[in-house]
Length: 236
Image 1 (cartoon, rainbow, N blue to C red):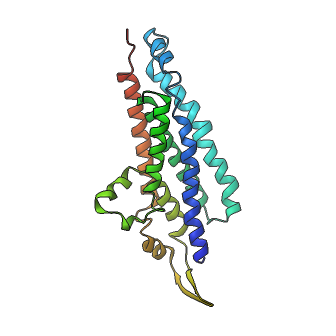
Image 2 (cartoon, rainbow, N blue to C red; image 1 turned 180 degrees about the vertical axis):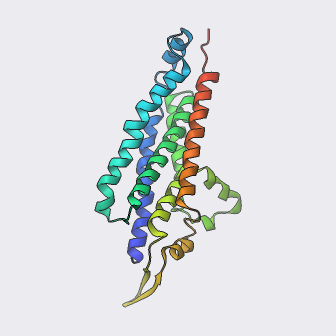
Image 3 (tube, one colour; image 1 turned 180 degrees about the horizontal axis):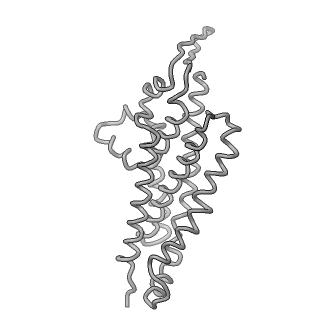
């Protein structure tokens, strides 16, 4: 409930997002490795785009995008000592949605790039770009006006703010402690909402952040399907 606890949580959530962002890079080669085989077999009438798309999505999402955040939450949430009272469910769902939307973005990058080297470079840049505008490395209120809109396209921005909002917004009796020389000064208590306002974080609701990630995930899946169905064609 003090400065150290607040600082620990701000850093913790950012590094959790880094972990799952790096994990999502494993989605880059999903379509590329079998792209030629898919194009030839579809042209031969072995199966359609929807069947191949659905099979790959299901086999990737459940074991690699949904189970890891669930297991991570079950193990780490009580060990770290984060807020209880049912908030762990929101924590887990936020991580799952973040992992899904980031992985879908990597899938799209791997699908439209010309080689694995290009897709790896583009995917890494996307992850760095997303994390830069999460709100931890640079306070949103300090971003130039012309750059602020970049955060709207950053999955990390929505994931980070949702995690922070869920953890601190309803926390009462938080204190800010400052040590000057040998003197220790304590101010407070402050509400979690007041602390978040000081950092310009969590300006919306958890439901709003998570619904935005969910809509982004569905939109990305739709784009991936359209690219596979309309753009990837056999060349004779």
